[in-house]
Image (cartoon, rainbow, N blue to C red; front, side, top):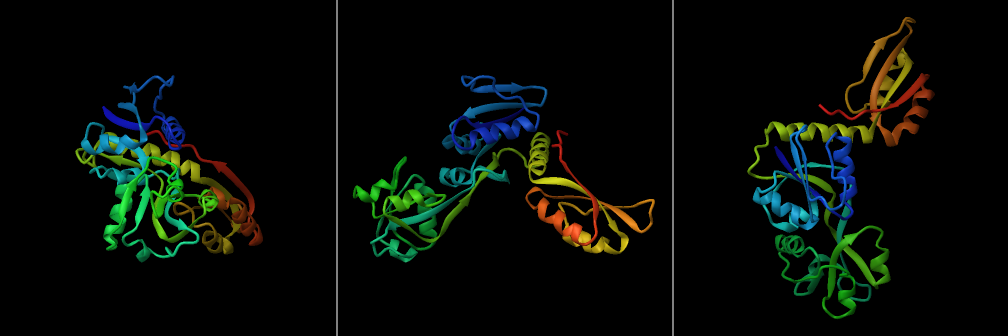
Length: 283
């Protein structure tokens, strides 16, 4: 039975639960359940603190986990990133007081950097030859500069509003672009059949989220042009129609591009454009 760790709370929790639910796995029925067995699908779910998931997976006590790339790298464990999951995106950046002389990476030399991700930030600076003191804080790191604990911070940035309100400016390249990922234990073989089934199911759900099926008719002489407009997830299926001057095309296209693709297809003479939602595979 495959042992899977999922976040019990936090921004990654609900999207993780929804992903597994759509993939056909049983979830807990109340918040007090810490373990859920799903013998029909050969898995056992463990609801754990997001910060701890990479540790459990890295030590092999749990086979697979859903966590953030940032949490994996900061854990220092041997857990292996297996696949990105497309949600929970975040960016890590350096920020310093707007009136300070800290404007580029080299200016961090000898400074105090406050962060909740001390290992991740420390490794990043060490790899670039920067010697700085990393001060670990569990939250609200933007207050550390004002309170005199640090000279600058390294933190998650979305719009940057919180940092600007704290009198900080963002500088340098992003430290990391993170998102939710699936990780596996180094003790679990990458060809494990249960792992392969889990990955197929999750990929099926993710594909259904991102793509739709588009069917349309197009004059035979415009098929190549239509295919160039809609390259799709896989090669399109092209079929002849009773009217030999027309062909039918079926292709999976990104959901976000549907309206533009329809406009482009109509401009070259396509007709009968039908868009259908995909169903996730549970094989």
